[in-house]
Length: 366
Image (cartoon, rainbow, N blue to C red; front, top):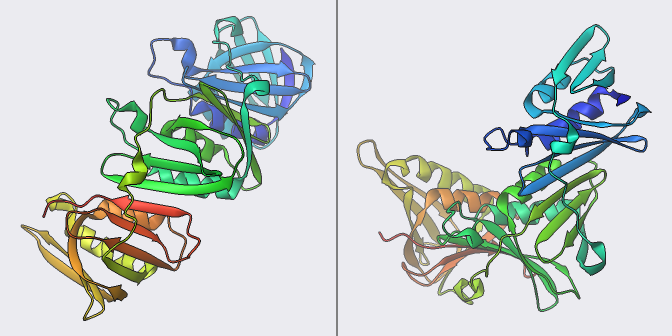
C-alpha cells in the first residue's frame, strides 16, 4: 500500500474511530485501527465487536492495500504533525509515515486478522433521515437518564419506537425517566440502542452535519453522516411500559424562569453533597414562591427562594444532581414543574403547549 493524505483529514478520522478501539481486550487486534484503500479513498475503521465505526477520507493512491496499526500511537503521532501532506507506505507488516522532516515506522498487523466489518441489508430495513441538530438534541435529552447497571441491560440504552404515528425516544434508570417525541413516521420500529453507541454518534457529528441517515434491521442500527458510519448491535430485550409512570395531571403546578431555577438548584446542590444529593422543594401557592432547602450536617444549610406562577402547593424531596441534569437539556426560557404529593413522581416540561419532551424524577423519602 502506498498513498498520500492531508494531515488534517487523517488526524480527524483517526481521532474519531480511535475512540472505539479498545486497549482493554482479550483480542489485541481490537486495539488497532484498520487502514484500507477503497478506490480513490482511504477507509479508516475500528471495532470493539459491539460497535464499528468507519471514516473515509480522500487520498492520492499509488498502490492499493491494507494494514492495521495501534490506534493510540498512530493517532497521537499524526495529530502532532504539522498541517502538511503525509506519505504512507506499507512494507511487510510495518507502516512508514513521512511528512516534511518527520519520519516514523510503526509496526502493524496484517489486515486479514482484523474482524470483518458489519453490514446491514438495506432492502429489509427501516430508514429515517433526521435533521442533525434535532437528532443531537433528542439524544442529549434522553441519554442522561439511561442506566449503568449491567444487570438490567434493557435500561442501558435509549428506546427508539413508533407510537401513534410518531417516533419517540425514551430512557429510564429506575429513578428518572425521559421521553422525547421526534418526527412523524409511517414505519414501525422498536429498538434499544446502547448509550455508548449514541454517545459515539454525537461525537461523530460536526458543525457541518445537516442530516443523519439511520437504518434499523432486526439486530443492528447504522448511523451515516457524510463519509462517516457507526454500526452497532441493538440491546436484546423488552423495554418496560414506561408511559404509565408519566403523570397525566398535577395537583401542584409551577411555572418557573429556567435560568433562575438552575442557579437555585446549583446552590442547593452544594449543601446536598453529604446527604445523598437530597434537596427539599417547597411550593407555596399563597406566597407564589418556590424554595429549595438542603443541609450539609457538618458544614451548614441553605434555603434559596424564587417567585413563580403557582397552582396548589406542597413539598417534595429530590436528588439535586438529577434536577440539575434535567434542567441542562431544556432550551426553553420557562419550564413547568408538577407533582401530586411528596411520594409521587415530579414531572418537568417546557411551557410550550406543543412540548415534545418530558422529564420525570422519582422523589426521595425525606
